[in-house]
Image (cartoon, rainbow, N blue to C red):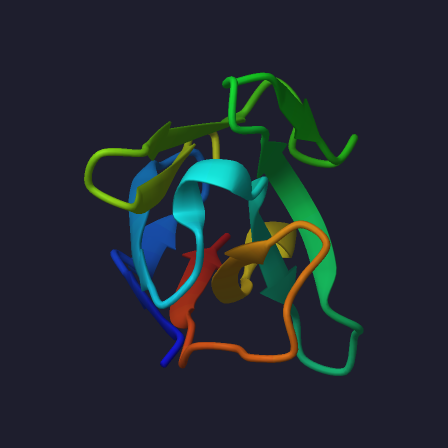
Length: 114
């Protein structure tokens, strides 16, 4: 049974930082690329960061230089360090494989106030 459990969100002022974590089970974590997605109100879900099995990373232009994605294959976890947060980063954040499987966890809310 697939489980993706995200945590670490919260309310932060613009310019602040948050670190999100995700624990994955029921997927072959060690052979899947993993990613962090986000969905803002009224918008489609988008991929913001991706990390391959070997550790290479890709970022959406909107977060490049501010967000860093990590993974720990031994613990089946993927994390997202978010710095210099902006109000437009406000969204529910989800982890999933890349490309995503048709299952989503509950996500974690990130709210950035101006």
